[in-house]
Length: 437
Image: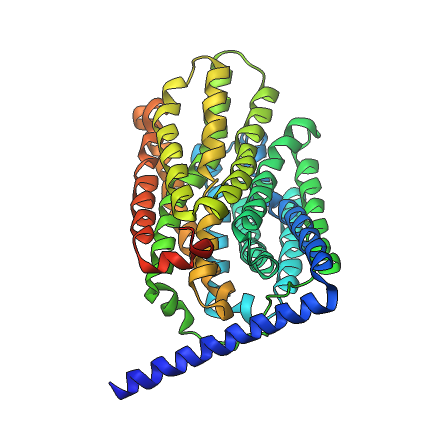
């Protein structure tokens, strides 16, 4: 009992010292720059980080967007096409696992990690565009792209969190909205760009290089940034032992079961539906960009509302809406293209609207010294789960067709809603959004 008491007092003392460090840094920054100047720097960081995230994460679907051309050139099977996306997911999982095990976002500069990872991913993606001539080589290179992107997304969230203590849900919502546009952008490049898919892939690599350079040259750490942490392998276990963080992660896992399967296979379903009605392939590519890109609007709107109403409420409503869409969207296959695209756009906006709020909950409920590690563990586990749902959808399409396949994603948002409602009922919820649960 005495040992526990001493450990508890030590933990409380560490937390108090950490709080004083944060307050001191904020006060120093505000007195040195003045609150108006600090506010301008904060919004400048928001714009630049969002732009860098958009450009860096454009690598994610750069191969998926050119699958029609690869299918023709490489005689790619449906399984091979699926693995081009799955390889990125698995590479990202491997990268985030390594990053979390070694506390990389917390023991080295997240800005440097972001820059190196974005440029490294761009180089590997360029190699895909220049040298990949078969599925085996392509899948290996896509795995490496995912490995690099593990150093782009979580560090970007950590940098943003150091600038926004108030309005953090909005700020991370903008960041995830930019990420969503970035992931949708290869479809737009493919619709408007060259008929040569390799040139389109190379163009996307140039975007990612620009994103990495923006962070290195023009973005600074915010006033809430802490000194580099010490390596601590125990942080992984502590993430799951924290009840509030654990429930926020459960909500995120339910959300992720739906999200990437939707992003991966909705463009395929739209192509098939429009082709069955004789519509142009260009329309299908542009529609895919708009459907996925609609998530950017959802992310920003959800962030603004969550800071005022509460994160558990917003995430629950978003998952309820997206879950209803995944049940209904298949019934519009091979029907009116405009009805299908309208419902798909609503799904695209709602399916990712809650994403940033789960991450924001982790930054508010977890240890600020190891915020990067906690965010990386969350994304690692969530993306590992997506590999199952991505593989499930084409199997179900073969069995029951597009009309019913997406219904299998509905249990994810149901589970997520239950987790967030449970979190809402706990005392820990008072730490979220300054008491707005």
